[in-house]
Length: 141
Image (cartoon, rainbow, N blue to C red; front, side, top):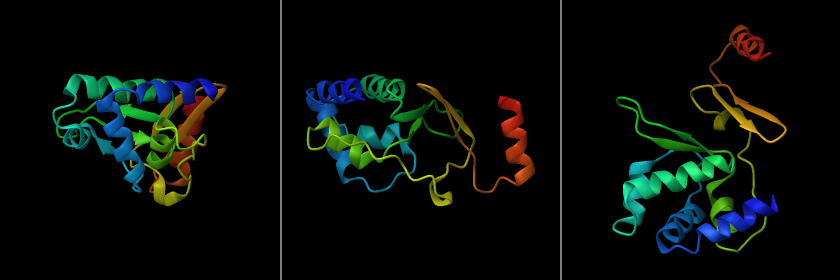
């Protein structure tokens, strides 16, 4: 965890990244965040390529799940930790990352399987039936 904290603080030294992390601190919504919305925040401080690289780096740190856009679905991230806590840690205002609640209201609309140190995280949509959930579990084992 200390590696993640120091990595976030190092990333926040860049002015464009700092704008993104400041935006995160104001974001209460834990729904997916599109690359286009982040581009609106940084305006001329970052290229799209740089924004995508940052979000992919956050994915590598297991803070978000970066989802590459397909057809009508834009590239976006889903948060494993609240955006506010990620921003606060990056800016040095906190040392605590707060996981996004696993309540049914915050589950994504598609199944996400994410490898994390020591295991995997599986997010299944709230609309999935019990047989569908078992099928997903069986396919992983």
